[in-house]
Length: 402
Image 1: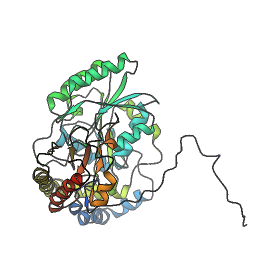
Image 2 (image 1 turned 90 degrees about the horizontal axis):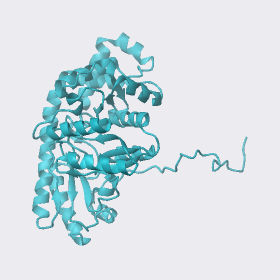
Image 3 (image 1 turned 180 degrees about the vertical axis):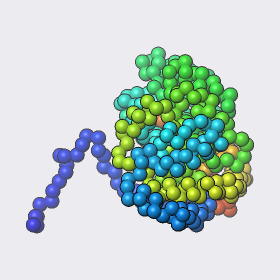
Image 4 (image 1 turned 90 degrees about the vertical axis):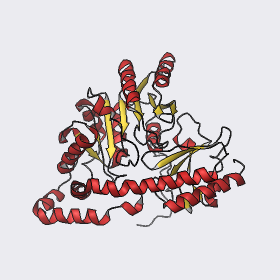
């Protein structure tokens, strides 16, 4: 049947739906805006070999498991491996049944947000926070407040002052989200002493903590600090992490650990079964044999790339009044220009000039950060990181912010 009048949904859309255009990903010549790990470290053949070994050794079982939807908590084998990894790397004691695998850490965060957050609830984060989590919190109508930070991350005394101020205003915070290792976007690592203080503060005020350790495996200097979850097993800490940055974002494999009652509530928002079983076979097989070898390949390259960006900054931003954070791991450094220098409004012009970055307001629940930008050092080569900083300084001078 052919009709001449086009059907319209204009009066039928739900109140919560929004027009969401498909965004085309554009890359500048020097792309510091991306959120990808080093592409040359992606262990494609290692993953393929691990997958083939699994099929060859246990093909009948694989075929049977692939004929069904995955367990709602995800692959038992990968959960068992994750349990062992958490104990070895982070001193977190949790058995496989206490781990929920998800389609990337983003799904884990979304499930926990929905289990804890009503519209209007106040959620605390760092002053600058991963934009993906900020967007999710805003989507679920949280009132997000960024607590003060310095080069080491959250400042305990200032955090408690923020809690008291908001409580006095009738806006008592409900929970705290933090990336305490190799923070996105600032690159900071929170010291153990501050973690212990923050735990005491959160217990006093009844605030659960969601710690996101998405970047825990990406450390090339210094020492990882104890996880919040390792310092406190009372159930006040939710632990979220991912295999995306360690191996490849395209695998979409994250996980969370939470108290049984919280896990039960979070799973009420889970749609369908667990994440990709085929990807789980590949990850488990590859990491069982090659986790440390992969980290030993990955992290020295990240250090080389980070050092090159730092050299480019030192050589080309001297006397500008700008600062660039010096992370000990992760993928990002945080550029801060002097107050009053707006590098957010010129972002598109600088992109056209050849350098991409994400401006500070993308990470700012308090609507500040116009003089800041996140720079990803993991994606480009070391040479391009250095040269890109030279061009960035040139473009900033052209636009009058240096």
